[in-house]
Length: 133
Image (tube, rainbow, N blue to C red; front, side, top):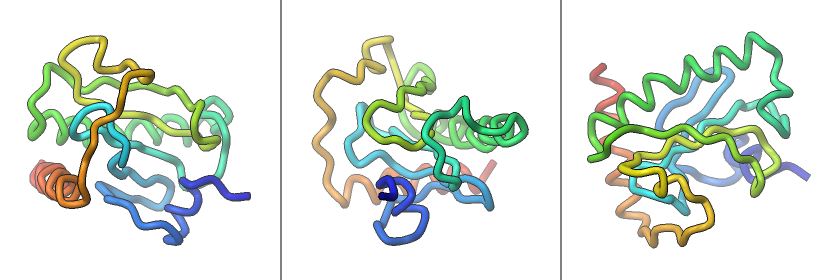
């Protein structure tokens, strides 16, 4: 069975996309730790990040870098934290989370309660920052 992320890649499930390339897609986490929490995934269905071929692994982080910079421009935070956890969805992914303390990367704490309108507004400002690099 395809993971929820593979279903997003195929277009079966909609997402608040931030960026997309031939190999990767970035979209807002609909259960975010903080506003601006973005997931970056390879389109290839692969369970763990360390299973990626070395060149694709490097490209994944290169794809992620400008997205993190765009988030930092428009979401008030000390920095954008990176996390590779992979316990909830069996598909390799990187969390980009705007943080002000290490506790902001605590995945056991309650997630934000966000509306579709809030997600759309966050998507818009991150995409604008990304396109104006």
